[in-house]
Image (cartoon, rainbow, N blue to C red; front, side):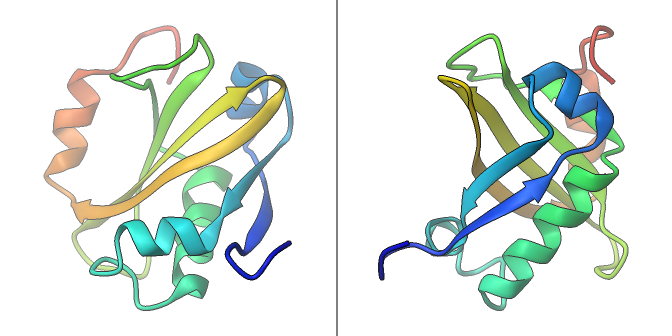
Length: 122
C-alpha cells in the first residue's frame, strides 16, 4: 500500500458473491473519501458504510452505467444515520471485485433505485 491509498478488503453477502464470482472485494478508502468528503466524516466512516451495505444489502441492481456484465450497485437503509441510505458500486474487473463508488443519500432515493431493479438480482 502506498501513501496515496488506503486499501481494505470487504466480505460480500452470499448473493453478491454469486453475482461477482468471489466472496471479497477491495476498496481504496482514501479515494472514495476524496470523491465525496461532504458525505463522510472520515475514512473510517467510509469503511463502516461499505461494510454495512455489502454485508446485508436490501437491494442489488445492475449498474445503470455498467462497464461489464458483473457491475452492480448495492443499497441499504443505514442503521445509524436516520433517513439515509448507503449505495455502493462494485464490479468485477478482470477477476478482482473492486468497490468503485460509495455514497450516502436521502432515503427517498431508495424508491428511485428500486424502480431500476432487475428481477434477476434482488
